[in-house]
Length: 351
Ligand SMILES: NC(=O)c1ccc[n+]([C@@H]2O[C@H](COP(=O)([O-])OP(=O)(O)OC[C@H]3O[C@@H](n4cnc5c(N)ncnc54)[C@H](O)[C@@H]3O)[C@@H](O)[C@H]2O)c1
Image 1 (cartoon, helix red, strand yellow):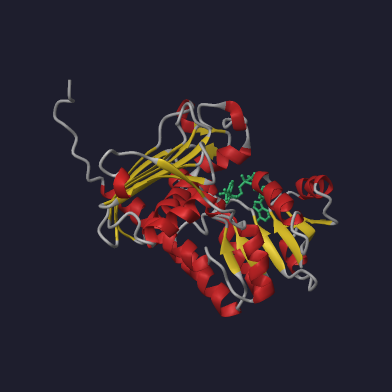
Image 2 (cartoon, rainbow, N blue to C red):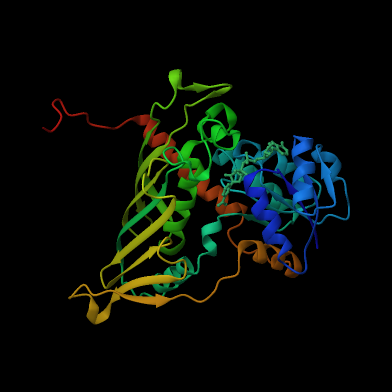
């Protein structure tokens, strides 16, 4: 299978490496608006052709599939162009920047009959797959309470580079550059991480905050107006309540995802920092003494592998564009809930 990559930034490097590890795949081209960046990327990853013009790359009949690693605000235009050219597509998350666009992309992919997936990459953690099985098998009983957190710290730690200098981070802080803040960026991951095992989200409340972080909240062409902390309360379709949060201010963490699910007969915990392939569980006779044990999760094929397998078999695996659009509807509801501003400010702060 011949595959091309759209975008030659940070995440595209992962795409190149992961697809090149798959024996049946040849990564034959990369395209970036910045032609020099595309060429440098192609040389670094041993990719034969580099393009600055997407239409020219998509016109190649020998390319069957693309992976889209452009910034969030560009996913729609670039993915629709790839779908119109008949390419199977793996698109980065979030699928789009609003539900209407995401639904349009899902409909286009469905009508064109191309394999479509969204790179909700934490599905690759064996622990979340096992967590889903345990809930589905009824090991926790009826799920009552859920707690999910995504903690990033790139606004306070330079471990991933300088957010105030590097365009890769600056576009994520700016609405005009297509960012929906931490909610769109990694809130989408943690909403998927909670709802993949527990089930559909039926209701939300949300509070978003954008903290001051530069003089006039501007750096060069970037207005720093996108949210960088998000607190959500969700109700799942079966009635369970959940607290879901995402922040870029999680000092002491780099990139941490945790999930706790409590049912009336048992509980589970996933902490990807501790282990991607272990689930802590408490059920049966361990419930009363609140004793936890550890279950090992079997290996899970990556989304890259499952995308390639889907093209070979003609069977679309999950998460597909329809799932991306469903998550986008939750994100839109969170923005609406936050805009309503239903917050009770205390007359006198608690002393
Ligand atoms: N799944 C994950 O875990 C994960 C992790 C990191 C990033 N991402 C996602 O990957 C995407 C890219 O993020 P990144 O950190 O690599 O960003 P980046 O800024 O490093 O790279 C994006 C690249 O796309 C190029 N580009 C912009 N518009 C283009 C267009 N119209 N055509 C072709 N190229 C274009 C830019 O020039 C840039 O080189 C984002 O949607 C992000 O949310 C996902």
